[in-house]
Amino acid sequence: MNIFGTIYKVMLIGSSHGNMVGAVIDGVPPNEEISIEQINEDLKRRAPGQSKVTTERKEGDSLIIEAGILNGKTTGEPIVAFVRNRDVDSSYYDEIRDTPRPGHADYPAYVKYKGANDYRGGGRFSGRMTIGLVIAGSIAKQILKRHNVEIIAYTKEIGGIVAEPEVVEENFIFSDENIVRVANRSSIQSIVDAILKAKEEGDSLGGVVECQVMGLPVGVGEPIFDSIESKLAHIAFSIPATKGIEFGSGFRAARMKGSEHNDPYVVEDDKIRTLTNNAGGILGGLSNGMPVVFRIAFKPTSSIKKKQTTINKETGQQVDLKVRGRHDPCIVPRAVPIVANAAAIVMLDLFLKGGFLHRR
Image 1: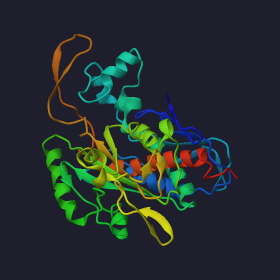
Image 2 (image 1 turned 45 degrees about the vertical axis):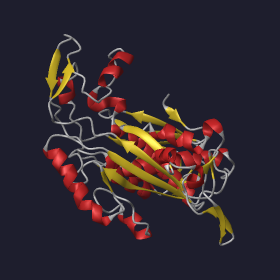
Image 3 (image 1 turned 180 degrees about the horizontal axis):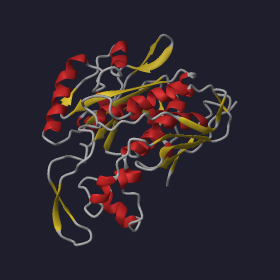
Image 4 (image 1 turned 180 degrees about the vertical axis):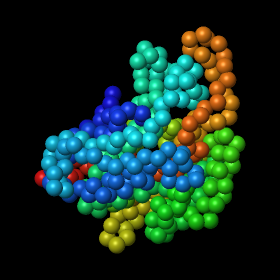
């Protein structure tokens, strides 16, 4: 229920307004060099309060390692890592405890846990739970990089504005440096304007994050239930606000002919590759040597300032609700590092399961 992975196992701990939030990570190969600075950098990339298009909530999110890393190397024991929740104001959630917010898990969580759930800030259903994914993914990325696997993610679309990535290495790097995380300079201002307009109207926007996993050896993944698609889809829907995922040509494949969709094989620089990548780098659930490409669709942020209709659980009466507090008008820019790090968790687990990376 709270654990993802077969060998590289990640258990998320804590809650949005509790004392801390983080992860317990088991199955980490020993003697791997891990940069705490790099993990903190990844945490900073997903942190709130980064710019005018994100929530004003401020979190230092400084990593605390309780076990599993000693003198800069993994020990082989489970890694216990978390950050403290410091900039917390739970008073508003006490006010709306009986009026579930539209678009949030307040009501089904209340029913499932018989009213005992931590409702503050969404509790376990908050986007803040992704901190554990970022920590575990950062560790996985560092290990994978030593095996020539690189993972990049960027904003592909926000509010219906599509930002096709400019396929130049520096533009992918550039996506980390602009506030909406696109890999297309010409799209930045229009997307920023759209987010700020929605924010001014008390509303929110959704969008799409695209991710590429490059350098995978052929054959990573397992058929049927542990295919690359199955595992990526599983972890994708563990990221709050995810509403869909597609690989390669995705749903466009339904409108193509086989002769258009099949990727012809060629030999370049003594390596077998394909001329196109409609398969998204995956065939039969296994990597085929091309970049694994997938996209995740995120719904608009549920907490908006516009008046919405809900009910009072105690009286059964219909009431109006205006959500207060500090919320992102669009979660997509902050989701970019989460998607990349979640993908790293999957890839390291499949690496270990398939024998591509042996414990030392």
